[in-house]
Image (cartoon, rainbow, N blue to C red; front, side, top):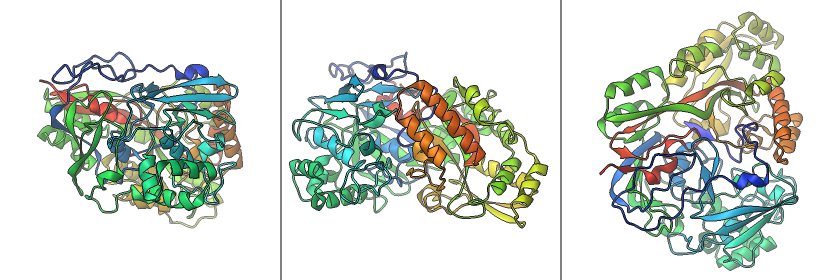
Length: 606
């Protein structure tokens, strides 16, 4: 399972567009002219974004997919506890917005939802216009009020003030913390609560401004739960009226999270703005959740009426595809998996490619033996067999794979060599047990030092990674323990119950999302790492639209993360997807959204 990176940034070097031209990603998800064909057409894609399928009429039927065995966590995927690929795979079908990720990680516009334009570069001003017919599934228009609430959730502190530097305690439990309020302290401006147009005036430039404004949640629902009208909620946000904002935030934080697996929320609480909605009775705890086409969706309808997400362990996906229990899978790209898929034959279609997802080992700086001992972290880094892991587990699937020596740029992207040369001298490329033992002794450690490596299990490849690390590092004086568990993302990682965490960040063509991971106050900084120089470099990077500034700050960040050994990057994931050959329009993506990114276009051949 991959965790998505909140905010922005996989490769600072991949985003070279000028500020005002960053709006030019093609819009290929326009509203259809009419329901003129019985099913979605098959269109050969020519770009990064969703192709226009022409007239689409929703066909009866069901298509099933799985991101893993993790249970659905709730309608609100913007909390630190729920923001991951397994949950957003579902909620991204429910909540629409101005943009989405293309297959190569580029930003694609959804002009069926609305349009936006940077009308000024200095100061940065962006004008947004919501489509006139854009409505929630309960018939309520999508308006400025929804986006004002989205801003409030990323701006207002528990003290009833707007953040001044993003370091205060947030009133709303938003994955991005107070970042948006830090850049736009005045919030979006509009003529009225029900306005279809609003404007963001940035106090300072934000590198990822184009993706900062995401699909909002329904303000009218939050207002009702807080005991006020939508107009009163808007007024309360403008006036920082905590008598309204506190109950509003309490509902935003908890009211949309699943309390009992298998029990869907009251439909009145979860109107949707995307092509799918919850199917009544469609959640079976521990098994699956089914969505059904949103009949009130104003954009291009879903091609197939039902979409089922099965909670299936990763090691069952290939057999489930062969049996017809799953129609689309994205299994871990292992030699055995590819061989098993190829053996199934022509009843399935296999796609492969490189992805913007990367594997890493992160130290726990909050507690344990590594927290205050750089020599001990160095000892562990010297004994981790990174090249062996890549050679044995990754290269047989992708012969171009290599050990990854950066975090913000990938080996297959331009600029990778430049960053690595500036940041890292190659000392941990090969196992050096003599150096590892010397560092172990320098740390004053007494063998055995217990190292619990946590990851989301079952996961055969990660079990093999841990086994390889144990075989090497136990020779130094460590006692590596495989503590992979099904609740790793839910409890182990957020609670810091590990010495080393093994997982993957899934990203896209962003610029500044690493700030949320590596900065001292980052909400995804699970290991509690802190370094003033890294914090300052992220501030400089995030507040600039200049690609040269991004590059230089990435070099500083990468070098410091190596020098202090935040963690150990391993490899970029190879991508493998497979699907029933009866399906049309399935297209894998290198971005964090995966193959399900265009699920509303999937259909069965007629």
